[in-house]
Image (cartoon, rainbow, N blue to C red; front, side, top):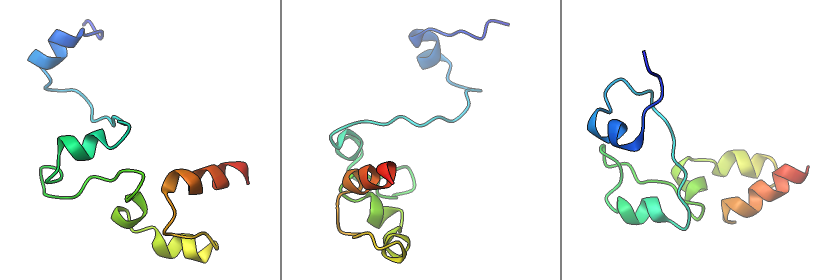
Length: 80
């Protein structure tokens, strides 16, 4: 069984592939899916990740400002 697939094979026959996550920059996912995912859930981007994933209380508990862009918070967490 050949485990390596090229782009065309994946496009033509995506069945059986394991779920994966693709990170896009600059809000590309939000622009691509303005109405959210297939279930209507809003897609998170760095400016709304905290709200969408409901991290406000966790951040407050650790004395981090939940209104700040998540990238800035991640940078702080990463250097602690």
